[in-house]
Length: 190
Image (cartoon, rainbow, N blue to C red; front, side):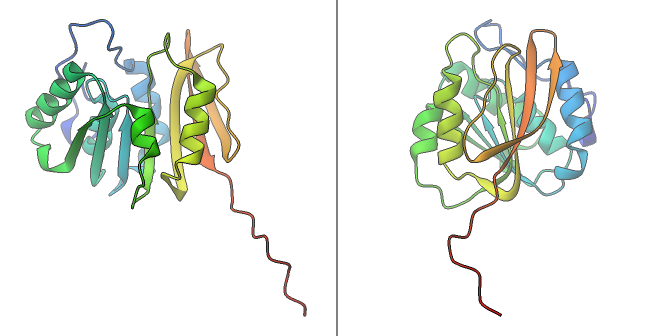
């Protein structure tokens, strides 16, 4: 796998020998790089189910300020750490070995501009995942959530608005934004 855009364009990343870690395809990373090009500059990015870190490292290459990588697999954590070091980006990344659902239940003092989610297709309950993502309040007001999923799954959740989706064979990437907060106060009289 190689970085397709930005200051690390053309650099090759170490990928997993273990087929249980499925990196995002080049076509998907290319599409995300093009569609999100303007959003990367100085962005705070969260890469859930990070695998080898391809999406978060793409964000760093394109100017993101910091990426938090979350995965529970020890092999994935080693890959992300190796790839950060390989690109000289160790200080721009935080790597956490945690279950994604446990991470989403934590009280976060920050929100991210971009969140990438690329879970294992075969063992993910997308209804539970999307509900946890919507309820975790991890996105900035104009933040963007990119979820990779099998094409037959429709990952929706109250509190998130589907902006766009793009299919790539058996996989799809869906882009979401948080729904605007409703103000429950009555309007001010004139």
